[in-house]
Structures are given as structure tokens and as C-alpha cells.
Amino acid sequence: MTEPGVVAVVKRDCPTCALIEPVLQDLVARGVVSTVHREDDDDGLEASWHLGIETVPTLIRGDERIVGWSRSQWEEFTGVSGLGDGLPDYQPGCGSRTAEPGLADELAVRFNGSTLRSRRVELAELEDEAEALFDRGWTDGLPVVAPTEARVLRMLSGTSRAPDEIVAVVPPDLVECTVEKVAVNAVMAGCRPEYLPVVLTAVEAACTETFNIHGLLATTYFSGPVVVVNGPIARAIGMNSGVNVLGQGNRANATIGRALQLVIRNVGGGRPGGVDRATLGNPGKYTFCYAEDEEGSPWEPLSVERGLAADASAVTLFAGEGPRGIVDQASRTPDSLARSFAGALRTVAHPKLPMAFDALVVVAPEHARVFREGGWSKSRLREELTALLTIDGGELVRGAGGCDEGIPEALGSASWPKFRPDGLLFVHAGGTAGMFSAIIGGWINGETGSQPVTQEVKG
Amino acid sequence: MTRVVLDPTGERSPSSRQRVDRPASLDGRTVALLDISKARGDKFLDRLAQLLEERGLRVARFRKPTFAKVAPVDLKHEISTKCDVVIEALAD
Image (tube, each protein chain N blue to C red):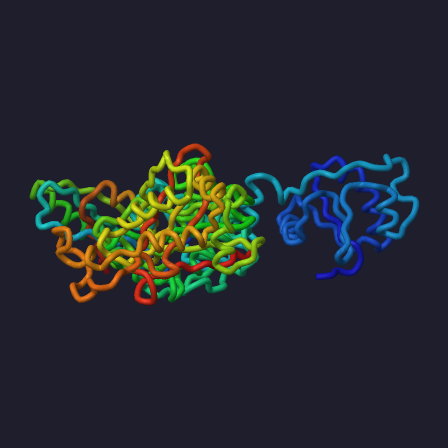
């Protein structure tokens, strides 16, 4: 909106505004300044908020702005010479009232709250906030942050996407989920606004046909969505890829994974005992999200291996169970260490069941060092593991080894790889001390189950 | 001040919470009598209170500010925390 003439924004308790008041009056009298917005009344405050004023006094003409008092600047801007006789040449301005702590949030709700479309729910004065949100069935069992209008508006500042844009159709109820609904759940999960683009991308990736969150939710199996974050955004929002990477304590890791699960629960309607039929589940179903340590890795990042540019930020979703450890403190050659990996990987789901379950291996720095020093690329490791894990069918058939589980007798004459060709993923992460890695076992893989999905994070 | 939060769900069901099941017996329960402020509703509720108290039940009385509007959330919350069942009477 371009107003004719110059627009000024001032407030009463700013010494600079008081100082230049006679100048302003002079410019109004000359017809140079057409409008003066004073932040001391509601109309002025609203105008200031919509103009995005940070400092008073501000003079505006079209897209040009100057702030504070500088005689030469004001003379050039207004085209009037000899302004402010007797005043100092220069005096900085003050902060706008619209940026005052407390007031800023209130103004956002007052002037921008009507853009939010979610149903408003009133809590009684005597109702404990945490208890009220539990009672409505909106939580994962842990307390959530109350999604007030002010908090949701602040969360939405983390993305350039419109609040009413549809992000995904969320199973199991197949509900169209807007950016706003994701933001509401991200607030509840404890996210900061800058995490929102990652949460939005994770929701999009989860709700693809390929990832199949519906089946993953409904299964009796242990697994849930595991989110791996790559690229610059992981560092920018302070994600953990180091010490205790799969554990607690980092806000971004903890809340992004949780926000995804809350969207599935609240928007999609997927709840334990309802469509979620897990026999045991796993603690990662509260939240399971971490970043790859790309800098210290001997290999290309997961997202690059899966086709994205090195400077792109990305999430990869994997249908995974809880992590289990691989301990090998003695191997100093990749051949030896690969045998430890193979022995542990064979047990994914069951040592006699091949090709049915993928695995995501989190290789910690001290194990990665062995592969780096041995000159093994990721694809070399995958090839060697495939060879080590190609198992004689006789060992796998039902009844072999005195165990009834296994593959049908008819398949016993061939050899079978434990993992399908693209069924082994590797991520480099973890603390620098400890010759450990971790296996995150998958769920039913391929087109009949879930396949990993990598998607670029955009603003 | 009443606090407002945004509904995080797909909004496919009412935002109000589900009613609890009716108790099999009123023994030992506290019964709320909610007067909705319609004329002579109090007469009806006075009689009900008398009958309930004769049976040894505890009775708590509440009143809506106006029959033309839904009960304030604070009133509903107070009833839910103090009583086990509620009788809401419409009288005309």
C-alpha cells in the first residue's frame, strides 16, 4: 500500500520522537507529511504493526524508510532544508511498542489471529492447563505445551508457507492437514518456530504412499517412523548428531519426532489401541529423530546417497524399531568389523528370516574410522555385508536348528540374502568415544510394506 | 480469564468431552442440580432436592446466568469437580 506523501510513526515515551515533534508539525503544515501514526492509541498501534515498524520515529515513502533523527537524512528524504533548527544533528530512535515483550504476541493475535482457522477450545479458569489437554486426549502421555493463538502464530513465523496450505492427507482418518494444524501440534510437542519446516517435511514424507504410515501405524510390529535429518538445517537449528545422538536432551531432536507423532495421533486419529495395534511398540514411538554427523563421516551423507544435492536439507523417514547395539572393541580392519556387523545384522527380526526386513545402521565415529582407514566406501561395506549375509537355505528352513520359524522347505535348496539390494542404510552419528554402532531394524519392506522416503526441506 | 487453545485434531468430532457413563446407583454420590434460570425452575429443583436428600444423597445447587446461553465453562468445570451426576432442569 502506498500512501500519498510521507508517513511518520512515533510514540509518546520516546525522547527522540519528543525532540522532533516540532519538525513533524512543520512538515505536516507544509503538506510533506500526510499521516502521523502514534503508537499511543489502538489505531496507531495497529497501523504500526501492519507497517512492520521496529524503530520510532520512522518516516516512510513507498518502499523507502528512514529511522531515528538525522537532520541531513530527513532533509534529503523530505526535500525540505533547514529542518530542526537548534536540534542536535543526530539522535537514534527508540524501539517500537509493537516489539515490546508481551505486547508483541498480543498484537499478533489481535491483528493476525483471524487468519487461524482451527476451532477454538475454551479452558475453564480453574482447569489445570496440563490436565485439560490430557483429558481431551491430545497428548502422547507426556505433558504438552498449550497451543494458544499467540504460540501458534509464532510457530507459523518459522515457515513462508500459507497457514491454509494442505501439507498432506493424514491416515488413518485421511484428514487434510494444513500447515496451521501441523503448527498447532508442533507447539504442543515443544518445537521452536525454526523447526517447523523440518516437521512439515517429515509429515509430507510420512504420508506418502511409499512410506505408508497407515500400515506402519496399524501393524502389531514394534516399529514407528524414524526421522534422519541431513544438510545445513540440522546445524542451523542445533540438532544433535554427536554424543547420545539417539538419546534424550536435545530439543530439536526430541520435539520434531514428537510433533510428527502428535500429527498422526491428533489430525490422523491414529491412537494406540485404536488403529495402532502394536503388540509391544517401542520407546521411539514418543519421538525418534536425529541428525547425521556429515562433517566427521568417511562417507557421503544419507540424503546425497539417496539422490539429493550436498547442500540440500532433507529428512529421510525409515520405518524402524528401537536401536540395538553392536559392540566390537577389537577390530582394526574393515574385514573384521564387517563380520561383527554381519553377525549382529543377521538377527534383525529373526536370524532365519531373510529379505523381509530392512535395517538402518548408525555407525559411530570410532567404527567409521576403521572403515575410513581401511579405505572402504559405503557401497563396498554394503557389498561385503551382502556376501557375508547370503545364507544357505538349509540353515533357514522351518525346523532347521530345531526351530520351527524360518522359510518354507521348498526354498531350502537356494541361498538367500538377509537384505534386499537397497535394504541396508548407513548413517554416521554418535559420540567420538566408543567402538559401537547401532542397528535400527525395519518393518515389512518393499511395495507391500514401507520403503524409506527422502524429501528435501523447504522453507 | 478464560484461556483459549486451538484444537489440534482433524475436528471430526465435537470438541466437548464425552459424558461419563450413568452410574448404576446414586448411593454415596453428590448430585448437582443446575437451575438454568427459567421461571419457576427453582420450584421444581427445590422439590427434587428435597426428594434426593430424603434418600440420604448429597445435593449441590448451581445456577446458569441465563437460559439463553450455554453454561460458562467455569461453571461446568466446577460442577464436574464437585459432583458425580448432574440434573439440568428445563421448566416453563
